[in-house]
Length: 371
Ligand SMILES: [Fe+2]
Ligand SMILES: [Fe+2]
Image 1 (cartoon, rainbow, N blue to C red):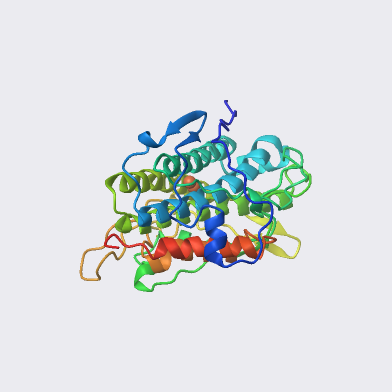
Image 2 (image 1 turned 60 degrees about the vertical axis):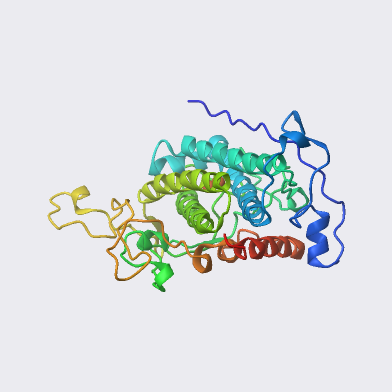
C-alpha cells in the first residue's frame, strides 16, 4: 500500500515578524488579506515564474474574498489532517484502533490529507495567477503537537486535536427530513465532549482509551468534511465568475465525497466500556445486521448513509436529497468559523488569529453575486 504523501508545496511568503495592535483592516492589508493588493510584475507560482501578462481575467473583489476564506479553511483542514495522517500511519495503537472501524481507515486518512494539501495549494496558486496574494497562516503555527510515536514532535500546529467537543448532529440531520435552513435542530448521536482525537503520548495497543480516541477521531473526520460540504455550497450562489463557480463546485464536491466515506466508517465505531458504564454507546445498527432481525430499517440505523430527502428551498416543494444546511446564516464562513472555534479546535490560538479568521469570514459572507 502506498502511504507516501505528496507534499509538494507552493513557496510560502514570509509573514511579518510581529503583529502590533493596528486596526484590523490595516493588519489584514499588511498581510495581503485586505482584498485589493496586486502582485508585482512577475511572481513565483510553485517553481514557475509567472508574468503579469499571464494573469489575465482579474478576479473581482467578491470572488477573491470567497476564495481567500476557502484558502484559510483548507489550510486549517490540511493542518488537522496532517496530524491525523502522521499518527494513522506511524502510531501502532492509533492505527490499530482506526482499523477496528475499517481496515482501510489509515489509507483513507492519508488520501484525505493529500486532497487537503491539493486544495490549499490550488486555491493559493489560483489567487496568485489572478494577481492576488496567497493566504499565509505560518505566523499562527504555534501550537504544540502530539509527542506520541509517529507524530512530528517538533512541528508547530495551527489546530489543537487534544480537547475537542465534536458535534455529531450531522448523523441525525442527514437521516432526517428536517433542514437547519428551516430552523430544524438535531440531537447528538454520541456525546463527545472535551475528548482527545489523537493520542498525546504512546498508549497501549487495543486499550479502551485508544479506541475511544479513534472513535472520536472517526466522528470528527465526518464533522469536518460535512462542514466543508455545507460551506462550499453556501458560497455557490454568491460567486460571480463561471471559473470561480467551477472551482467552488468541484472542490466542494470532494468535501462531500470525503464526508460520505467518513459517515459510513463512523457507523462502525464499537462501544467502549468504562468500569462505571458505557462511555461510547452501541450505535443503532440496522436489523439486517442482527441475527433474526425482522424489523424494518430505522432512519437512524448506521447503514442509512445516503442523504435522506429533506426540506429544500420551500416547504411547498417535494422533499429532496441534498446537502444541508447551505444558507449563509447556517453554513457560511462565520458559521463555519464559529463551529470550529466552539469545538475547541483552536484552543491556545492568539487573539490575532481569531481576529483574522472572523474578519475574513465576515468579508466572505458579505459577498453577493450582484455586488
Ligand atoms: Fe478541503
Ligand atoms: Fe476536507
